[in-house]
Image (cartoon, rainbow, N blue to C red; front, side, top):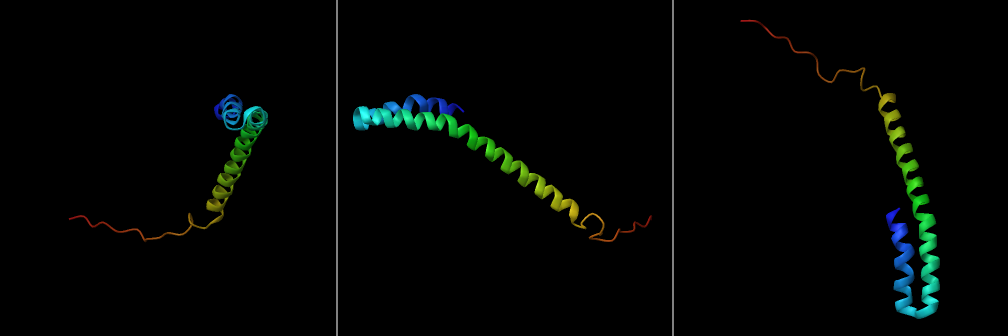
Length: 79
């Protein structure tokens, strides 16, 4: 969110230095679109990672890993 807010100020300044008034307008457009699109992108990334985590959790519980022993128990003899 901070990148979106700083881009609202920085992009018009940078573009105005490069291309004058037309660059300023392009920078305002770029900064405003970044202010809107960056939080949306972050929210979609949150949903994607959450869905991936749920998918991986379901895969673990679907596997028969918990029912099968890998190694038989060892016996201890007292001396």
